[in-house]
Length: 336
Image (tube, rainbow, N blue to C red):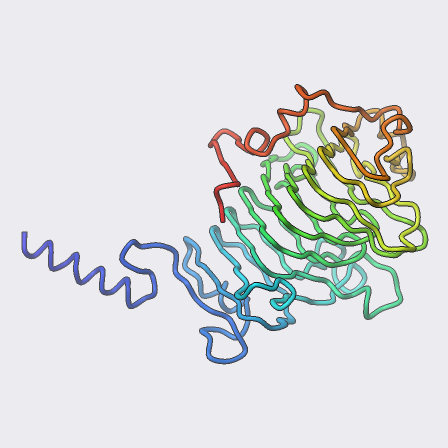
């Protein structure tokens, strides 16, 4: 009995000394220019145990590319200002192996969390040559972002499932929850085939003469369990944003729903555009819908004929706790 107690006490002391704590919670480390455990975010991720860690990031600008391939990694900006904790880089499709290689932050580990910080790709601010340039590439399940700014121009956020765009391959749904976030860009700046909810977010179209598209969702299969839902969001635009559409179908079964959204931006009245370079029209097979849109850009009578206005009963299945529950009953609203 005594020997067992002594072993347990020694084990607890060892865990505490490693920063894990008595309850064996996630390890916590800090990142900062001075006086922190690490000076780069990538070094903190690399040092994290296989079952994840809390990485607290002190105010500063971290100019680096970060890859998160472990589960349960949390990136938490310290302080109360998301503008003061900035992860940024300037890669582009032209300077790397393509759009998929251009991100500032790549996440493939499940149960990822980011909060109170900015993730940006500033390629468009340093080059006059147009190119896709991703800020965040998120290809993972059960991911949560709270109070995060995502800054870019073309292809700011790649919100994707895993393997679903490969014909005939395994398709793993990536559930993602974005709460109280700000996302800006111009062309297709939220794209991919995740099953994602954006709640209480501002979606902002920046100045771009030719105009742009908020979304380019890319479901490839008629029965694919994925799509973007924007609930209680606000859509805004810079002067000079041009003709802005709610979205266009990157693939045949693109699915995007706007619910209870304040559309302050001057969205083109038809709302949705086809993918004009596709071999055949995709709007007939896409699922585009709205429910209770308000503001100057809300114009249900003028919307594209293939788009739909949902009833209250139809909208219920897109509520966060229902839509993202999955077989494991996941409730992202509890993740903070």
